[in-house]
Length: 257
Length: 383
Image (tube, rainbow over all chains, first blue to last red; front, top):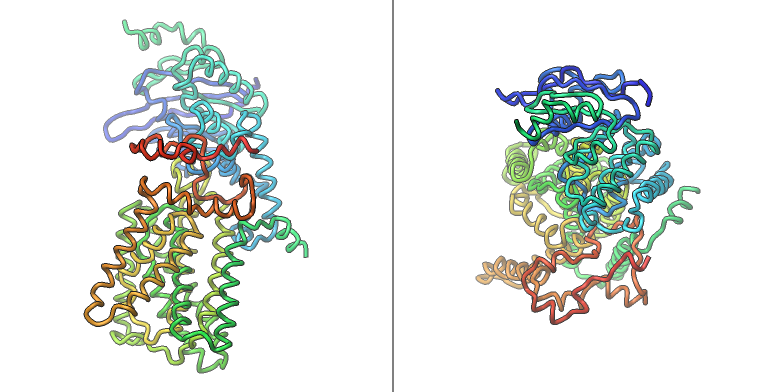
């Protein structure tokens, strides 16, 4: 793990009307790290994700990817800068085949640039591009063991595979930072085990930094390098996994007095 | 040369069969016309079918692929018809060739309609669903009223076409139809088409995957308006005067009916439905004269309802499967199973492993009647 900081949030916060949903979140995520963001229901974890991906505009503070401030950018631009995400409730392109889902993820890669005019009149690199994109998509799908199902509609995949496809699609956008929103939700222990392997594998293979929201403590303590605990929109504890999980405030927040 | 080699390398019958059929229709009808066998009314009908196809297919880009409901398509057509005909009248005095004048007018009408589409789209595409439908509907009315009140457009009398193109216009129309199809299908079968479809399927996810949603919405809207404008010019070249009363809300709905009847998101369906509805309309108008004319819309509605029932009612499944185009063509070409390639543009639902619709639908009886047909074949096992 290098010391290079990929994502830095500076006092990040948002309020909806008078409700302060998230306040004073200071994260520093290093390159190649698996960073966990945990907390009870309604603590504001997904809101943090939504701010980092441009869905919400933070009302306080700002955040940087590398040295670049991304606050206030459009969602698709933030994605192009290098933050990709998955969703808590899976959002695949349900009426498209599995491979097309990944192909949409590959849309903005600079090596596959091709303007509409070229596509319509089949000029330039259109055919070469399409073939290269398809090969790349197949490569990604084979990593996630989805190659066999590539011509099925995404909505017909079993739940676990839908999760995997979502991650594959997010990786197709070639991000620097991958945000996973409850990747293990609704999975059985065996699938969770598999998922942990997958996440580690992604980190090593793609040289990726991962920020994940999770409720499953096995998964969190199993793969995360560092943790941040949110409660009522504020940071409760931050640091190494064992320290954080034994922090009295964290125990209180999870188990009560 | 390498351009054609690449196209030939990626040639697929499935993609080109529509063009071939349309070209055959064009060739045959042109020959018949040259031989003097074809009636004038048939030529007029073919022209109408032609521009209806352009309208339906272009609206399908917005409704079927982008997933936004637009009720202003007749408005774009109106703009194209008026401005195209206006320019045509100007040009015809200077240029002797009618065809050349028409081509320039089409380009002009299309571009103007596209600009209007962009102008309307910029604010309107921030809206969704019903609200967008209302705005486009209002646009339709505005364009109609504008054309009515502009003096040089002839006011309430409509814009007079000095020299209508004549009955052979349908040949031009069908060439334009084929060009339109090539452009729109190529667009849909590219990464840009995928982006547009992704927006329909899940806008939030599309944004998160880096798709510039505003750009693609505007792009689809503009290109649909462009072709609607061209269809308008083709309409204006045959009719004199071009009158704003033809481009009402009803006409927008009629185009929408073509799209829905043919299957949302199915271009071939749009073509068939556009031809069918136009034919039906004209035949009914011709057959029911005098007092019976009032019955036209009744019969029209009845036929539409029957078609919709046939397409959707569970009880009709048995007959539907017998007439399934895909199965018929498989039988015809003696193919064991149609191998779906991942790049094939099977935008209509690909038969899936789990017949969810059937599991959810309540009529268990029909399913028991035909146990072997109720289960779509398993695609992946054939690969």
